Image 1 (cartoon, rainbow, N blue to C red):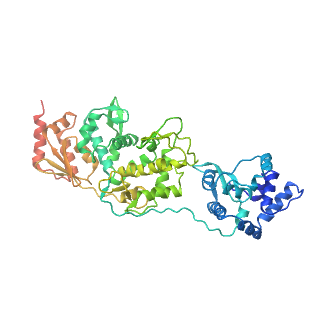
Image 2 (image 1 turned 180 degrees about the horizontal axis):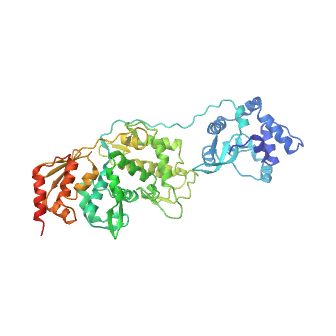
Image 3 (image 1 turned 60 degrees about the vertical axis):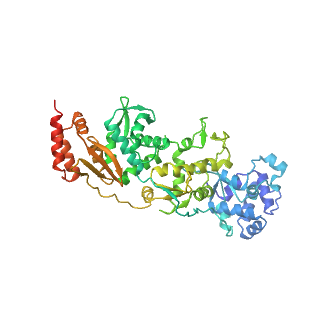
Length: 493
């Protein structure tokens, strides 16, 4: 909290007031403390006296003063990191050493001149020491040039290889829900059984990536789409509502689930580091929102270098996931060398690595960004905020695509456009076999065995036909209608 100059001075012992007076060229005699405070306040709020003091400052000292003036309040660890420490000296030691005559840092020089003061700052993310300039001093400071960090990401040429997931994660969630609807899959904490993954692999959007699959399963559970029932994974009633949502709404639900999820800790999961559980805890939601605060500043559908995005956050807000500036109590090792990554010097291998991981992992999987790669390279060199991502981040209005009907052909093939109702497709999978997907259209085949299996679970052929009529706009070929009735009769004992 910023306090008035008089109140700041009143908190100091006499020796500190004498140190400030010496810096301002004020000769004290035997005045009492109230008189000293009044003399200092009068001199320090005099524009001409301020001009003389500022002339004696070095360029770095003026820069530090301008920085505090521009920021209003500067967190203690930020001030120390940029302009050095301020010793905590008691009155006796201060007087004995006359420390104000040999300050150990830029910050300490301003401190002994009474230009900056300590206080206690508190906001949503930070409770701790801050430095400020009293308003009376601010009023007489002349304009001081200051160059504050600016967010500046560099454009990149269109990459040779592009990965744009779009709604692939949601599509893969649909595959899981459909499979669990029709099969008994035993529960295993955190993931589906490996046998289930093997059977689902041909239907997934990308080659099996264990971390992405772990992320997908966790999102499905965290969003309430699946749960354990009597030792088996089963879709929930909430899954039906999710399937009835539009494409963007489904993706947005996954994005919001991840954004607010305290159970998925990106730092502890990302490759390249090993976090030791020694009692320290980070806040994964704080870290995500810290990165997203800068992602929303990026132009949409423009390729940008990942390195410049990381460096901009480093310049603007290096403490985005450690607002208290504590870089020494988190026990994190380099997974390759085993060395501890402690201290601010390890920022790029921890914070920087996390930003890169979020871009190449969760934000890519969720369709918020696309990533670009040089030919033959495995690590992305650039990224692009997608139109879908801009919608999820609230940067643009979005409209859902109109639903298209399912098409049933006389040869028992069923064509399901990507913009068809996912809930209808979910019901279709009860009695039709998936046969592949191409150009955004999924292909199914209605077969006697799959229909009879559905009938055995309690459905009737009339219910199946009624569903197909609704989903196709009453365009069910006569051959299919006859076959459904025939298969039903043949299956009766």
